[in-house]
Image 1 (cartoon, rainbow, N blue to C red):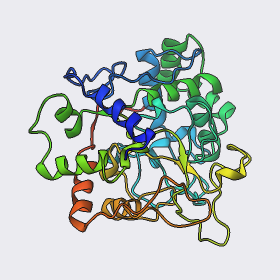
Image 2 (cartoon, rainbow, N blue to C red):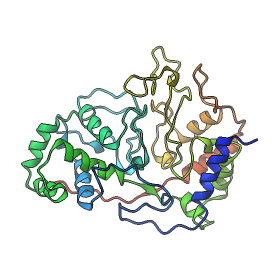
Image 3 (cartoon, helix red, strand yellow):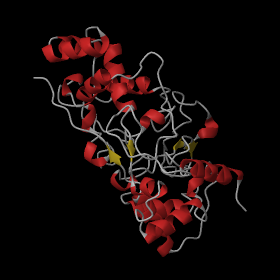
Length: 337
C-alpha cells in the first residue's frame, strides 16, 4: 500500500511531466528544461539583473574576497563537478578542514534553508557566513580593495549604482547562485517526450525509484529533494557524532539529532563523495546504503527501511540517478587585473 507521502510525491511528478517542456535556455533568468514549474526563493530587496549576475559570477571566482587572497568560492565548488570538489571535506582559507562535505551550488536558489543542517534561512545569509568563515573574508576590507580595481568599481556602479560594500557584494554573489540552475538532463528530455533519452536500464530504475525503492518520498521531482531533514544514520556511531539540525545555531531541537538536509539527486553522478561527511565514495555504494534503509540508530527516520532490492535492481536504480545529470548553462568569467 502506498503511503500518503508517496502518493503526494507521485502527484508532483505527474504534474511536472504532464506536457512537453520548451528547450533549455542559456538565459540565467529563465529556468532550464525540467525546472519550469518551480519558483525561486526570492529576496525582496535583491531582484535579478543581468549586471548583478555577471558581477556575482566574477566575485565567485575572485580570490581577493578571501583573507589570504588565495581562496575563492570556486575553490570548493568547481563548475566541472556541478559546483562540488570531489573531496570528502574541503580546507578553509586558513588550512583547517571543514567537518562536512561541500554540496552542489546548482539549484540552491530553490531552497529555503541552506547548509547541511539548515541553519541559514536565506541564500544571502548563507553567502555572508561562508564568505567570513570559509574563505576568511573581512567584508569591509575586501570592499575597499574591490573599489580600487577600476573594472570592479564600474561593475558595482552598473549593478547597484554604488561603490562595493558588504551588502551589495553579498547580493551580487547571491544573485549569481540563485540563478545557477541545472536541468536539461536525460530524465528531463525523456519526460518532455523524447522516449529515447533514457536507456532501458534507467527506465527500469525510474520505476523502482517511484515505486518499490521508495526514493521518491524524500527525493521528490523535479528538484529530487523534499527540502526537509532526515536522520539516515551517517556518522551516528561516532563517539561524538555530528548532531546536524539539532544544533543550537540550526533548529535547536534534540528531536532532530542526526538529521541533515535531503541532498538533491540532480547531478549526483558527478558530485561524489556522498552524504554530509563525504564518507561514501561511489554513487552505487550510496544507492545501496539507502536501499538497505540507512544505518541503524535510535534517531533514524522511520521512513527508512530495507527495500529488499537485488544487485540488478541497485544497478538499475543507479542508472536512473545517473540520468539526472544535467546541463548548467555557464561560461567562466574573466577577472579584472
